[in-house]
Image 1 (cartoon, helix red, strand yellow):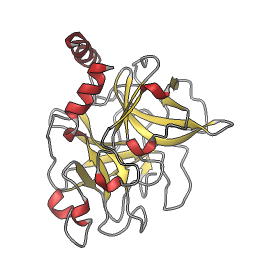
Image 2: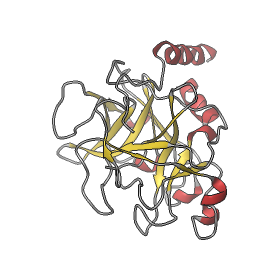
Image 3: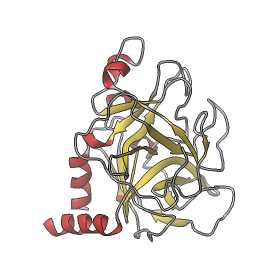
Length: 269
């Protein structure tokens, strides 16, 4: 068992994480087209709809054969695949890696309650049927240190192929948007989200830029002092009033609250 932990740590260390070959520029709602492959740990989680595989959620590659996403993205009745190295979903660009997933290799947090997103624990891990080939278009995202909480207004980016407006269309090109952190004290104020926001969550953005349907499971990317990008959040939910409702920032699962769970799942599987 210890050997598995060491293997995982060595793999992460050997390949590095959070350092894209193509630097991000500074549609998610009111976002912008991302530079191709500037968020190389971003994945498209797709399900088979009876005819083709269709995008349903985002995710982050955190080890060569492990993807982190949201628990609410997973249904036991669906067949999934993961696409790595994706940028423009409307064309085959040549660098995509399509990796099948078996339901036995999907691990949803045991305390996740599917009818209660606000109850927390919206996290899942997917073990890929084969390791990703790491290159300049497919790289690992860093998991932040356990317990790390970012201060108010800390600059982070949400990325994904989610709807451009509430009820709108899904974009073909990966979108990004600057989404500053809204600290727990602010986000839990009565005229904001109130007490429904747990300490295992992180809020970001607000009434101008936000996540939306299709961004779920994708990363909140925040740059550390050493220049590496860490996946601090997993897109979880937005307000029923709309994706970019006033004082209802996008809510993410705070990854640094689940380091032990992540390590345990990888170590034992």
